[in-house]
Image (cartoon, rainbow, N blue to C red):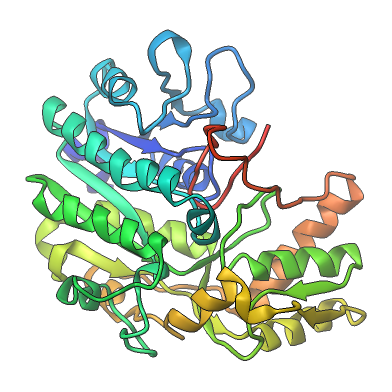
Length: 370
């Protein structure tokens, strides 16, 4: 009760990338806890249909660029317009604008502009307008082959800044951490494992194979697996992740004991084979095979580089993060929601990345191509 009266609860949270798989649900959770949320997104354009779910869109304050345009993190004028025009002071900004791992490999130039260039512009704007806290979603893609295979930590990333993450994606995330380290405000970052959800859209990442597999099973289609089926990867169900992100945002600065206030937020780890066994308990007729020329693909390469598991100990110790969902409950929940979509004839589908130069809406966890 007392916390709701604290000064920070009287201030707003700005979410950049609010239309994505993480951003929309982070907005929902913050609104539920009586926070004011300002939503910015490249697809959030004045007088056009919102990319946010209707029940969330009606409760956030929409933020537009000059002339009612969407907010592009690569456009400093657009960011300044949003931050500078709010009547309610902004306490925290979440930067969720980023392409996924395979997308970054396909278009590293654009990914660099969005991820590192965007962060640089955002931090300048936050300094200019006195925003005190910036939170950032890092990724397991930051870990290279030198990283621990088990219980990898955000601290390891901080202590090994010269390690080779093995991808442009990981280098871009590192670039963001370096910018945050030099910034004079309260910066925090969460290292996200693979994100599991039942949304209608997702982009081209590595751990997204699990989303594709559950969708294929629901549709009765054969799944072609792009990662080695015995490789373990850390994942998290979105409800658990969102809870962790809010806990990280709300923690007192002196409670965050990790260097650069960075934390992994894991749920559980599994291999594709373990996933397929769970899927078969729901859809016994599920069929799969490995992709031809498997090892030539970016997803297979990344899956072998990344850790088998990441540590949740630090987040539990410092702000009480404890995930609830496991593989069994997640598979059942996601596939149940897919079946609802199927009955409504609104089956989710993964959409391809737009061509270079098409200014795609890079959002954490979702790429929606008009």
